[in-house]
Image (cartoon, rainbow over all chains, first blue to last red; front, side):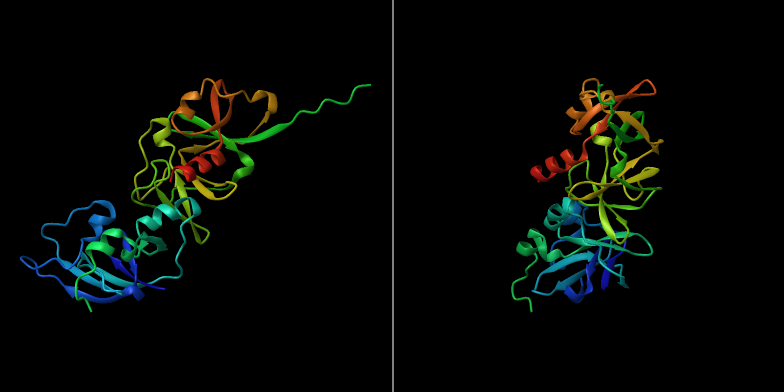
Length: 124
Length: 153
């Protein structure tokens, strides 16, 4: 399984759901989607941090930190029953063991905020 | 002639967390691990703040800090010991400071929860309490905790 690791935020996204990585204007540009770390766990947008937008299969977009890399991981560790329902509400589909850290794998399309706000009109 | 008297005993594994001692049934303990890396999952109940990887799967991290009025776990490191516990329908990692030697307790040595009722009030069901080394030690009922957690979500 390949994941797109968002560096510094402890999140990874399945590579197969990412259609494109788009640039975001550093200032004055329109928002291309909700800031994923913020809707995920309340972290605000870094004032000076570089950002990118991910266009996801289905048309939704989310903004993420610009630092990211692709990693090949052995397998997705499913959440246990006690956490599965809560995790699903957060868009968490499981965990992966990366060399740098244990990391949550998130499908942002499952987040209601992305389903509503991240689906950009006319997105291709 | 009367039948020989038999005494039922339960194997308990006492553990230390902060200044508290707790115990679980030793038969539920699958493995004791050292400090582990874990990951927090947002919006989870305070006693089940995230998960760690164990034998190719993810297991929930059980943090007794909120119930025992102790500092809560903060990612990425657990406490010094993690007891992997088999519950009826799930597996959890109970993160503690120390694990003590297993002891056998006669059934009549396990009293209804009284002195340790504050632990139950903190949201941690207990199947009883026992005196070990002159300390009253609550015996956790983690299956009851899991059932309550499922109902609450």
